[in-house]
Length: 193
Image (cartoon, rainbow, N blue to C red; front, side):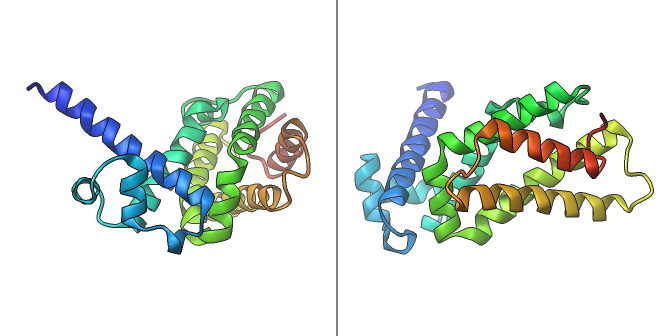
């Protein structure tokens, strides 16, 4: 048997486990989810789960990481980690795609905020800090303020805004959220006009 077949089987098994966990997470409280529930839903045995994950907390952490990575990769916002955004339209499009992704996965994000806020918030903050720092470096702005301080401040504000929006049942449409957040980022010199 070749490694590529084995690797594909492992990838499919892990995806099945993560998908099963996500489905269960939407149905019941995290503390009530068992490894048996996940194994039954994923159509694998318990031993298979323990080959890939330590426990349900490990599955949860991997699930959060997977969702957040997909959020930034699938959105135009992922461009901000690689190259300078040069126009207002480009920045608003990137932010709109971010808010669209959150809207499309609103139920899962709502559950994360309800059940496991700290873990989700820390993961989201880590990704946001990296994105903000990269964009500030590319834009060559905010040079008079300590880089780490301004990055922490802006990433925390961005994460707090996303949390507020999710907790308030997506009070505004994604394009409006994108425009408003863009103006806040311009005022804080993450983007220049």
